[in-house]
Length: 314
Image (cartoon, rainbow, N blue to C red; front, side, top):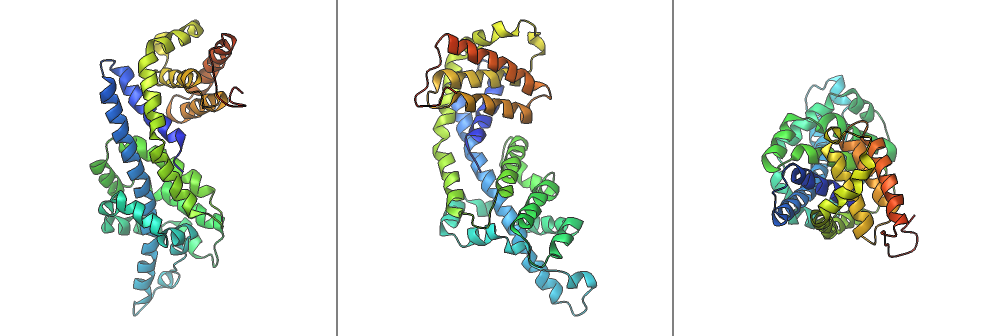
């Protein structure tokens, strides 16, 4: 599901651009961040909607095969397992879900021909044929086929890419993030899943965008100070060879340590280490981890980290 990591990533993307062009005004960066976050929500819902549409198209495909006067052996194997995924049964019955899709105008992005083409790609995959042969799929088998669709059918699909490219800037970065988040969410689905919790997480993410805006403002305001905190710990490193993105991530983490009193120290550091693993160089994780660990102890020794609440300093 969408969460604060997504907000950190969106902020990181804007700040990376800022680091490449320090002339950008804060108001311009804020506007860019707000637009990017809004588009991320829309794209997230769009991926779910397309997954649902492709699953429901299995009903159409099966009906067409069953209506043939002469059926092949392959036709006779067609079934509607895909449309019976518990996630989409519950979503399709939810008025709250329909309202959310309507508010984001998701249906205007759905192209029925793209849905059909995605299903046709899936239909020819051995993995899908294996799934269709299962009489009563388990929750894990349902989840696995959705994850397979995201990885092997949706990723790099020219038809879907064309729609995303036309409607969304930076869709490549967002697609990578959102497919990763969806895979993680789907992999954890249980038979007793609560759809209202899923829907509320999207609404909460929209409300929590102020976290990203505050982080952006603090970074912009304290940029020079954050740089000075990091530099003494880079004595054995060539500044010109340090990835710009790694510097952005470290400054964001320190920003949270110093200026966001409600975010636990451990959470801030672990989040940016994990983000570096996904978005930066192969060696970035160890580099970012090492520098942040040093800085954390230095700031604690100077009594500069002030957290509100029990356990947040750990």
